[in-house]
Length: 423
Ligand code: GAP
Image (cartoon, rainbow, N blue to C red; front, side):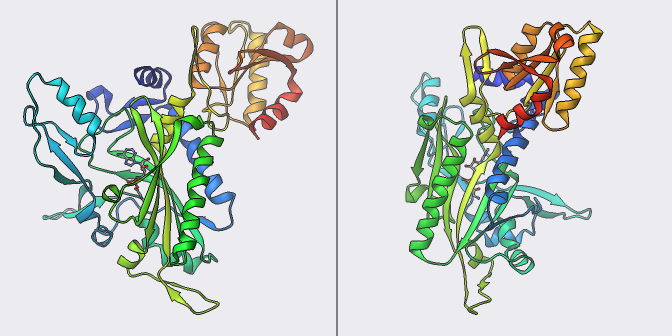
């Protein structure tokens, strides 16, 4: 994890929030390449969940909602974490985190005893308005409720018919008492969620649940995560969220242990019923409360696990073997020598040509070895170098990140070559 967090800072993936003032626990900023990677994750997700399907539409709801929403959704009462407090140093740890509890006990010479578990609500309060008392509202604890409160708006304004889904990405906030493991548990994070509405039927909803479990697992493996490091973990009844009929996590074997990537939840009719919403089948006239299968992933966790999983060390060489679809830059272009105007201007020409079609970066710092070193650490799949031969035969070298092998190619063929590689 130290290597990952050092690389993330060195190359501009992730910075500590408010670092110049000592940081702020549980908050992180994404740097130039981190923002690209994050956008690429969300774009790939949106493509597979919305564009590649006919039965899913998108939504972008507000972060702050009428506080009644959180009362009806059960979050004000039940969105809690049970914590135990170390009686020696008063540190609080989640009562279900046995590993952390054991590790903490080793930090003290004396025998540690713990308080009884106490529950803490995770909702983040905000105060709105100018007159006192200000109105108390909440930053959303999950992005999901905006989908339910807009259920009728979506069915009235589009042609969706059950079964159908509403997809959304966006920020969520939780007053986590123990943020940690780099960005894994933060107080501000982004989610990518699908709420898939089905008929209230045990068999049908179970089939959809199984379907979405494998679809979501496939999404991660298609984007390159090692299959051996992924698994499903069913929630025991006492660990299920208050809204879940049953639930499974997709877990990744991180350096800090098997950890939740994404939750697949059968939410039954919990939310729509509490919001008093129903669905009317216009053909049959039948009216009922649909059940909901939810896939809820974390963009920040996905980004962290993509970084960890793609990290490679080969002797002195460190590189990120990110899927080209996710890589912040697809191609880096450089002149062999930055102080030779004829090479620089030819390289600029190629850079401008490729830039029209794909995300390309210009790099002319230091020597060529340093540039390869930097682009490897960013995960740029291909580097194009303009050298003296280019000036005579219009060919360049393409260097592959994963094999470090180079081949020569004519400039005219570059665009098609990269586009075919990117799929
Ligand atoms: N709408 C359902 C829901 O919010 P969840 O299991 O509480 O379910 C879903 O959260 C996903 O959101 C998690 O699998 C994780 O990827 C991400 N997530 C939750 N809490 C997080 C936190 N404190 N920091 C970063 N990501 C978090």
